[in-house]
Length: 308
Image (cartoon, rainbow, N blue to C red; front, side, top):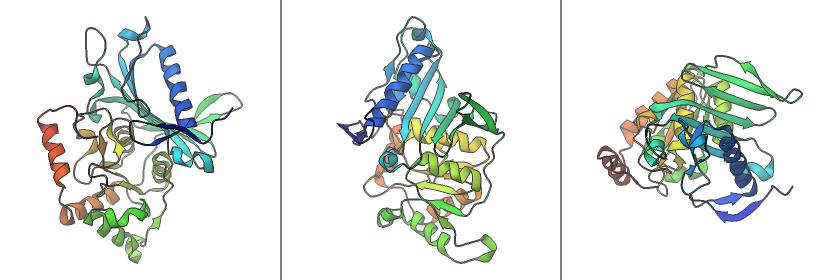
């Protein structure tokens, strides 16, 4: 089966789709349609959300948001990729579910998880009562509990960010990177820079060892680049349940209003004390851009259809 290389199409994000992106998206949607538990799937790979109108599914209680294949730029070089998903309870009562069922704050998630496809296949999952990790045992085809009650260390020595974009970062992020690189024995600095380019892989490593993952705003992406509904919110839910912290540099990710399906956000996520430090520097050295202030005003006014 030919599943490597580019599909030759562009998704709603303006990104070139890989063949495995499309395959993963089709497989997850097919599985969810046959399950009967969700009435809508919102995917990174689809312009609009997908209604599931089967006799069982049309009145189902749950909304499923998914990034079917996170880090797909790494597919052809055999680097770890993953899947991120989020589950919400439907809020509409009559008729078909609507966009408002999808545009819920991250605080309303009933479950979230990620799957990492690496040296082993792991499912890390929360329902709001802590985080557990399950590793696939291929011999029996089952996920077995391998990492019960996962906790991210409060401190870490790893920072994950694409430093190639340094010149475009807010001043607070630049100050934090310099802080990470200063020698200081008491705080175990300089820290180690590790960036895979797959949010799942970078965050999973930091979950185990302690660290921070940063994807800030840039001059070219003034609202951030990662998607709030099916990347930032589920990962923030998981990390908070593991004792970590997730913000956009100023405010908690899970408290952000959701105004559009493919809404973007900056994210600073990982070990609590590391996130608090970079937030301190953001407050001191970086004011919000006009675009960020305009987007916040739209959110507060309840205007749906913010800037993607």
